Length: 211
Ligand code: MG
Image (cartoon, rainbow, N blue to C red; front, side, top):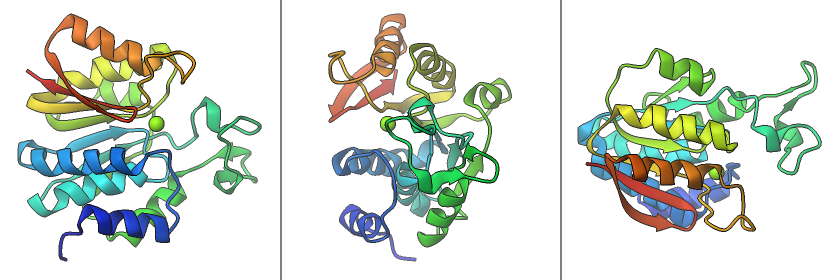
């Protein structure tokens, strides 16, 4: 299959109404980094939700034989729960009274013919990282946004990023009025403790490189 340009991916994501909270320029940045780093190893993302970011990462690295580990418990973050601000009732399993974004992820990966380029992992980040051993070219953190959760995800998963690999963190808001401080504080801590350099920010997506 011929590689899609990022504009073609944007068009399909819009046409198929792929749900997600990632802006086009942020998505394009993930695609570009995944493309550039594919030769260094697989990517991993925390917080796949319905697979919007997964699609861009996997489209970026698939042509170099890359794969994306797509980690999510698929029960939604605090803000996705029933009655909360980002609740989407189409992702609510009425029978089991729980959020479940996994069917949407599977469907969206199939739409983009990405089932051979994505390895879904359905559990908590804390459980997966306890058993992890694979070096990673890129880690995208977009899971729980509570300070202790964002801190855990950034500090624990960043240990597996290879030299010159990238840690990408979504929802970095320096100003508390714009959003929660969890991801921002986690990135500050990582820069303070060393091992990473700040590269750039694309909207709320922060990019750090392993030294
Ligand atoms: Mg996000």
